[in-house]
Amino acid sequence: MLELTVNGQAHVVEADPEMPLLWVLRDHLGLTGTKYGCGVAACGACTVLVGGEAVRSCTLPAGDVRDAVTTIEGHGNPEALSALQAAWIEHQVAQCGYCQPGQIMQAASLLADNPAPSDEEIDTAMRGNLCRCGTYQRVRTAIRAAAGEMREARL
Image (cartoon, rainbow, N blue to C red; front, side, top):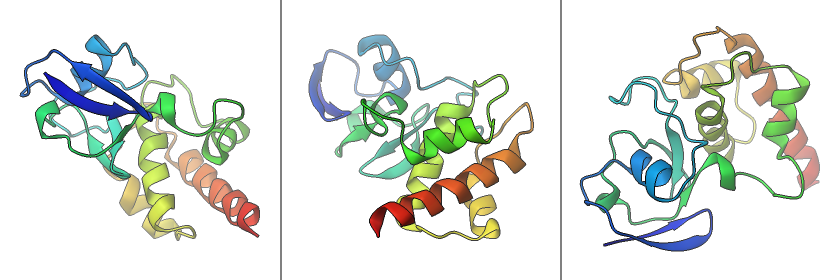
């Protein structure tokens, strides 16, 4: 039995502790927003936050998770889009959309640690999140816009 807090809700899951967190989220909890991409933590499609830090859930044994997990379903406010989600739409980041949950979660971790990242810092933080459609420029633009919106909201 695994005890996990996911998106603010406690769960007891009957699963092998060695099962990757990705499959616990998708198969046991029905949270399919987190995507399977490569299975070796190389593409970032499976990125979630654990204790606020971006991690690749495809290789993280669920039994090793001690902190709260946030998936794309738990990102932001259910009543309104987060600044990142709104910027993603405004700047038309998504094409196929498959990598976007992981991209947004990685960006959320970046902005939590660095509310005013430079382009170089954005590129470095996002380097491990691959986009087959090549929307990297729009990702950077959306992150900059969200960072600005988040700073204004704090004033």
